[in-house]
Length: 560
Image 1 (cartoon, rainbow, N blue to C red):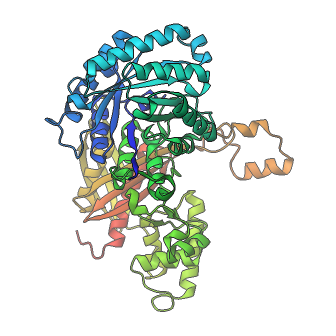
Image 2: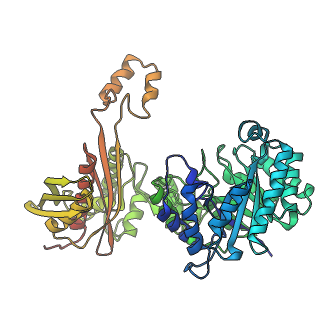
Image 3: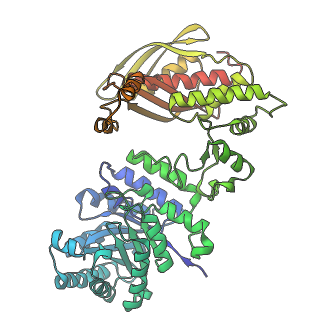
């Protein structure tokens, strides 16, 4: 039988320690519920000695870790981190006590490397061993036979190996049944981590009766690779976060680890079938929304580009067989393959889009001249917007170049008058031009965008609609702009400087622009809108207006 790999999610603890983000009780609860529903084995719900975590942890333990109250697909173990201090261990137990007795875990740790002994807690070997003995034992006493105790030698990979063995041996001797071997700085090579796990399995008495765990940080960019190598060496619990959240460069992204284990199951020969991978995309979007941390464009599993192709050569391959370039079946992780039209798209890419979206076949429903014109227009437009085209924009090009419709807007924002309060209440009156005729509408809402949606529904006569996605960007290009400071460190010839001036890169802010991107649902369809303006709110208004314009242009007839 294949060994089962337990997934220990620490998004609510180590992930919550990510600089620049914050999570309240509701945020933590919703993430914990989603994790339980996806089949995660252990959720580290916080650090009980932090008074900001403590009360939230008790409520999460009650609703996530108790069969009586949980309505999730699974009831995971709930875990609290604790330093090797009696007061920490006691608080950790109080925080998880509302969970069922077999769903409680206390995770005890102390730094054991020279660096941490010298510059962090200041304790030496003999005192550390005494603290481990007393507090691992205390944790075992509190959780009883049904609960679990995990022990971590923080910065294990920079710890003297003989001392590391002593710390782990002491923890096992005092009741630890999960032994975590963290690479806290993330700079152990995967091969070194593999050898360390192998040596520990040979050198620590009783370690085979415990669950070995990996908690790898990503400072070197190798967190997933090191975790995978640890699994080859005997690791049977993976600790990580969603979207690589965590201290500094974050932790191993366990979504990527699990996906690798699924795809390469014949190599790793372990079992992660209890994890519902089809929910990975939704889970990542939830965490991204809560933390306001964007999903990296090229994230291996949930990135926007991960299952998308645009370049002509690649598209030709995946059209014939998605495995030409995609190793992961998109449906495995809740995704679909997407062909995006952009500046590298050729005839094959555009023709494939047309075929998939009901515009017919080359030579039968449209000519090669039409296809070439549409392809050229798409490339120019993609360079202009510095982005791939949305599905809606691509359809609007098809309506023009393939079906002969005018490439003109039918809905335009003429003017608006808005009022906003400090409490977030907003009202707005707008003037639209719809097919050349002016229409008015008014709206109220919790904010200016909410109010605008109500107003444009009234003015356009298109309802009900729902704003499904909303993104705002504000940036400017030119010397002095964010990211462009590097230009000030370079020398340019007179000809290069003229080129810079000709492209407007001498600007120091006065050319700033804002962009709004939205998705609006109407009649079971999704319509994208893009707007550009000097003001960020106006850019969003324009984006919404363009989405409504697309509804008019792609749905015939609309008589309102």
